[in-house]
Image (cartoon, rainbow, N blue to C red; front, side, top):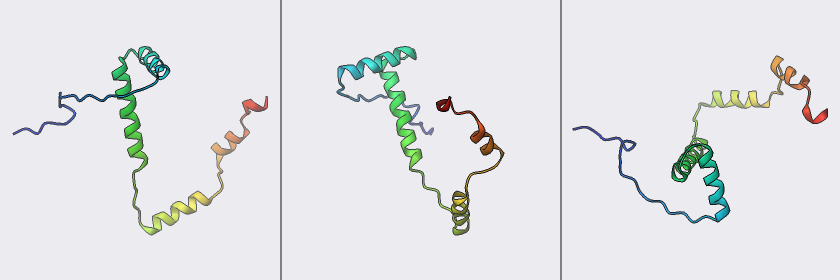
Length: 95
């Protein structure tokens, strides 16, 4: 007996949304620019937002020694060749 993946499930479910006309027009414009339907665009955007939201909530557990080292590194001032080069770069807002 094969286990069917939920991603391979061909069944779809309706989601009804009420939005203002100007938001719908904006979504339609963006969808058209990407060559997608409104539904495809909204589903992709909602999926990405959902994944990012869940990834932002990921809990990482470490031992006390690792956590103390992490705090020590955060407390150190920035430095190094890359940082010095960044600080020496011309700033567009100062021209």
